[in-house]
Length: 178
Image (cartoon, rainbow, N blue to C red; front, side, top):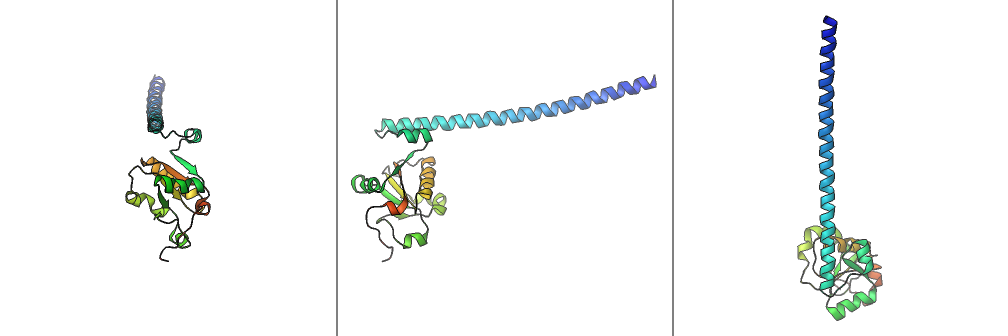
């Protein structure tokens, strides 16, 4: 009889331990599912926002290119001639995101210099009046990252990355302080 009671007690303890483990696993699974749902919800919100922004571009008469839609970006690559035309014809601003040492070798006349490393903390210095903005660096990589950052921050003007960097600029360069 004692063995039967011990066996019954052990079975109860094992059942309770098994139930506790089951409850812990269920709680973990529930938490993981909540995280996944929250992540999917955020992804859908971001995609909805992108769609709205693309539609706003179309409504404003500045339709995105197929590449912009496929890549989900709100900026365009511009050749040197296109960039110069944006500045001369459309009054685009120019942003140089290179280092101080790189700028010392020559910069696009009138460009605002804001090194990429400082862009996040100094972005408020960049006028956002709806005018187009041509962004450049040495080769085009940092300026593409700057365009992406500015587009995510809701920059209102059309953003253009000078493909090929400062070397692609067809106009004269000036040396700061010269």
